[in-house]
Image 1 (tube, helix red, strand yellow):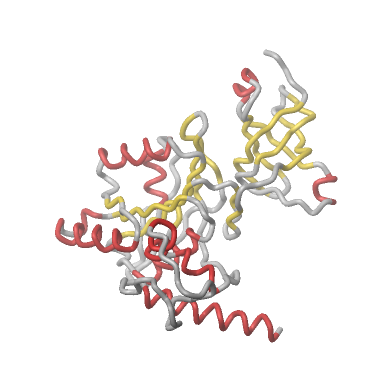
Image 2 (cartoon, helix red, strand yellow; image 1 turned 180 degrees about the horizontal axis):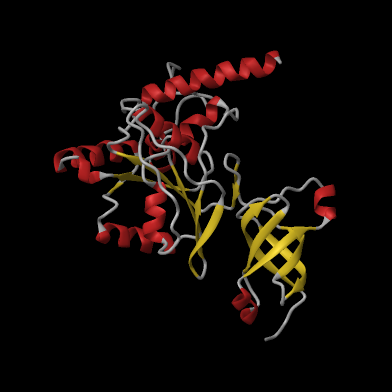
Length: 305
């Protein structure tokens, strides 16, 4: 083996002050796969924080004990804050059609937060075996009008799961997001054999599940593809400027980016301004208006503080 003293790696798991790092280059060294690392004090002094998904440079490599030291952190493409995961390429929002029952407002909030990261966003609807084919067709058309072509599947459908697996392996780093009890962990167990993540039933009392995932971790799907399982996903409290909100709705994105429709005034919020040329006759427009009002209220609260 041609040993090297320094190489790049991907942070796949973090616990306390330690990190698991998978090697990304240098040929034969990749056979060593994973090293247990600590970061140099200089990184801490610079107030640089390392997250799962970060690309780092490691040195002081001990091949026998599989340990090393992180001495540099590369600039990340993006960062999801809660939970903290870096360099996401694809987000899969997962909701169940039943048990727990599909909540359209909650689902819209998940999609909007995903769009804010400016990555590819897909929608998966699980437990399709609990609804009729007519309801399934209705949901497909409904979410297609939202700007998404949902993958509606049963977690026992091998053909659809195989197609999803092929798609995930073509991505760089995918993350599964959604409320508890919708089948995220079960889906991960299907995609990655022998992972054996614990699952929990949906409570009959509160009609939702409990989070069973405790740590953020990247799992390898192929040579250059990973998937993230997370212990939960909260709605962002980060302030979004009102003028940016339209870009989080595919219904508006198509009109602005593809159809090149422009309003009379550049600061148009597409509410009731004169010269607004965008079509507002879509289902989620009421969600959009509420988000605009929430953004304005949050702005005034920030100003007051």
